[in-house]
Image (cartoon, rainbow, N blue to C red; front, side, top):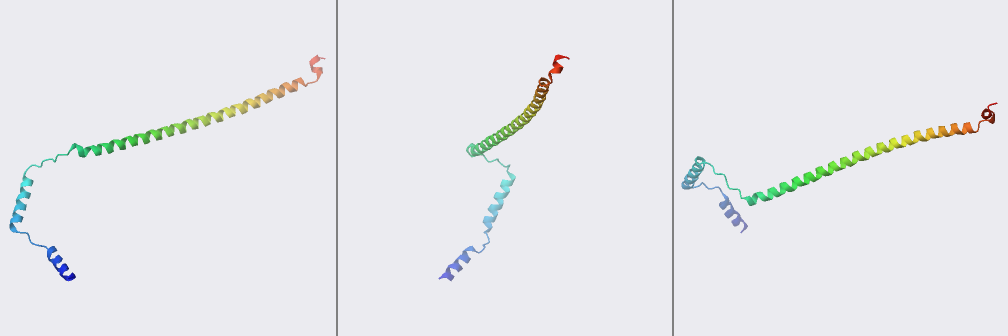
Length: 121
């Protein structure tokens, strides 16, 4: 029984030469469509709307990413500027502290000087 099904299937699937009438009609239709000016197929607006929606959504996503990156870069610049200002303030405070210490030592050394210099003798 299995061989019978296989032989029927082979017979059904073997190539068959088309009839002459079929070939003539096909050739005539092909020539008539080539000779006639091509008409643009109508594109329904409903088919284009999903594409417009995806395009709009992708454009909005790109803009959001660009704004986010720009904001992050701005924050990094502000942070770097703030750190640089902090270093400068710390350096200024160190220099001020050193100068105040020198002035304090100078005043302290003058006040502990012997009383002979003060009396002018």
